[in-house]
Length: 176
Image (cartoon, rainbow, N blue to C red; front, side, top):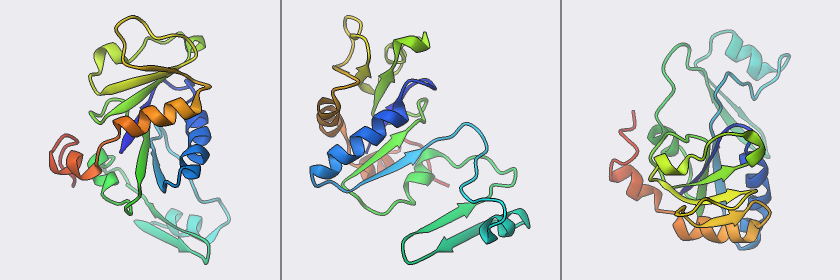
């Protein structure tokens, strides 16, 4: 497990969509967890799943011959902690978390100078490397240019840790 963290607009999603084919070409099965800071829908108005959820269903599972999705409506309950969400994944070679920048899991900071936001790494000891469109400041963790997708993949794989170690070691907090 490894994370990608950075301010909104830094290019986390763009980088992740470029990394997935590279990692897949290396023979790795990869899953992702994306954090959103706002309400979102994965079903569409007019679809049965949306109608079920809007009518009050706590969970709606949609299944077909090609995929399935489980939608859980929190209905004013707090967002589950990261550890609880991670326990829901099937085993894969690599799980990449996009976002959750305040959580203590190992992560690569994605930084874009045009955002005019500060680097996260001086204040976050869990940042193991940087991917940026400008060179990293002196004393920073290992740096790769945002366009060096192969080098970033190498950095992620070298720093990834077994998920069970984080969950069992209590570093991510208790799952509910």
